[in-house]
Length: 96
Image 1: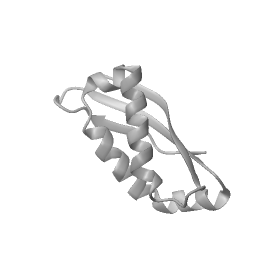
Image 2: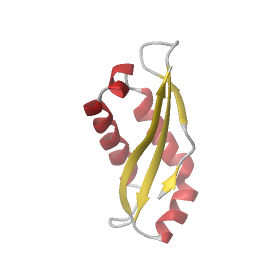
Image 3: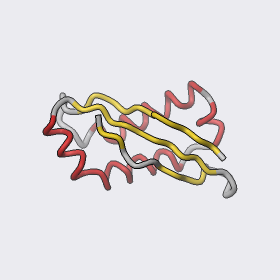
Protein backbone atom coordinates (compact mmCIF):
# COMPACT_ATOMS: atom_id res chain seq x y z
CA UNK A 1 0.00 0.00 0.00
CA UNK A 2 1.14 3.50 -0.82
CA UNK A 3 -0.60 6.44 0.87
CA UNK A 4 -0.63 9.66 -1.10
CA UNK A 5 -0.47 13.09 0.46
CA UNK A 6 -4.02 14.31 1.17
CA UNK A 7 -5.88 16.18 -1.55
CA UNK A 8 -7.49 19.50 -0.62
CA UNK A 9 -9.83 20.73 -3.32
CA UNK A 10 -12.65 23.19 -3.93
CA UNK A 11 -15.75 21.21 -4.74
CA UNK A 12 -17.52 21.84 -8.02
CA UNK A 13 -20.10 24.61 -8.05
CA UNK A 14 -18.98 26.50 -4.95
CA UNK A 15 -15.83 28.38 -4.05
CA UNK A 16 -16.63 28.24 -0.34
CA UNK A 17 -16.62 24.45 0.19
CA UNK A 18 -13.50 22.37 0.48
CA UNK A 19 -12.89 18.66 0.68
CA UNK A 20 -9.82 17.00 2.12
CA UNK A 21 -9.44 13.43 0.85
CA UNK A 22 -6.79 10.89 1.73
CA UNK A 23 -6.17 8.09 -0.76
CA UNK A 24 -4.12 4.88 -0.67
CA UNK A 25 -3.17 2.67 -3.61
CA UNK A 26 -2.87 -1.09 -3.25
CA UNK A 27 -0.11 -2.62 -5.34
CA UNK A 28 0.94 -6.13 -6.25
CA UNK A 29 4.68 -5.98 -5.58
CA UNK A 30 7.63 -3.86 -4.48
CA UNK A 31 8.52 -2.92 -8.06
CA UNK A 32 5.08 -1.34 -8.43
CA UNK A 33 5.66 0.62 -5.21
CA UNK A 34 8.85 2.10 -6.69
CA UNK A 35 6.99 2.86 -9.93
CA UNK A 36 4.28 4.65 -7.92
CA UNK A 37 6.84 6.85 -6.20
CA UNK A 38 8.20 7.94 -9.59
CA UNK A 39 4.73 8.46 -11.04
CA UNK A 40 3.21 10.30 -8.06
CA UNK A 41 2.83 13.65 -9.88
CA UNK A 42 0.97 11.97 -12.75
CA UNK A 43 -1.19 9.93 -10.36
CA UNK A 44 -2.07 13.01 -8.32
CA UNK A 45 -2.89 14.99 -11.46
CA UNK A 46 -5.28 12.29 -12.70
CA UNK A 47 -6.92 12.03 -9.31
CA UNK A 48 -7.28 15.80 -8.96
CA UNK A 49 -8.99 15.91 -12.35
CA UNK A 50 -11.58 13.38 -11.14
CA UNK A 51 -12.04 14.87 -7.68
CA UNK A 52 -12.31 18.47 -8.87
CA UNK A 53 -15.20 17.62 -11.18
CA UNK A 54 -17.46 16.34 -8.37
CA UNK A 55 -20.19 18.28 -6.56
CA UNK A 56 -20.26 18.19 -2.74
CA UNK A 57 -23.18 15.74 -2.62
CA UNK A 58 -21.01 12.99 -4.13
CA UNK A 59 -18.61 13.04 -1.19
CA UNK A 60 -21.43 12.81 1.36
CA UNK A 61 -23.14 9.82 -0.27
CA UNK A 62 -21.88 6.23 0.11
CA UNK A 63 -22.77 5.32 -3.48
CA UNK A 64 -21.16 8.53 -4.69
CA UNK A 65 -17.93 7.73 -2.87
CA UNK A 66 -17.93 4.24 -4.39
CA UNK A 67 -18.29 5.77 -7.85
CA UNK A 68 -15.44 8.18 -7.12
CA UNK A 69 -13.21 5.29 -6.01
CA UNK A 70 -13.96 3.49 -9.28
CA UNK A 71 -13.18 6.60 -11.33
CA UNK A 72 -9.92 7.12 -9.42
CA UNK A 73 -8.99 3.49 -9.98
CA UNK A 74 -9.83 3.66 -13.68
CA UNK A 75 -7.83 6.87 -14.01
CA UNK A 76 -4.58 5.46 -12.65
CA UNK A 77 -4.75 1.73 -13.43
CA UNK A 78 -3.46 2.32 -16.95
CA UNK A 79 -0.16 3.54 -15.51
CA UNK A 80 0.60 0.04 -14.21
CA UNK A 81 1.15 -3.42 -15.62
CA UNK A 82 -1.78 -5.85 -15.25
CA UNK A 83 -1.03 -7.45 -11.88
CA UNK A 84 0.87 -4.52 -10.34
CA UNK A 85 -2.24 -2.44 -9.58
CA UNK A 86 -4.84 -3.78 -7.12
CA UNK A 87 -7.07 -0.82 -6.24
CA UNK A 88 -7.68 2.60 -4.74
CA UNK A 89 -9.00 3.23 -1.25
CA UNK A 90 -10.38 6.46 0.18
CA UNK A 91 -9.05 6.48 3.73
CA UNK A 92 -10.37 9.83 4.95
CA UNK A 93 -12.84 12.53 3.85
CA UNK A 94 -13.38 15.86 5.56
CA UNK A 95 -15.70 18.47 4.06
CA UNK A 96 -15.94 22.07 5.14
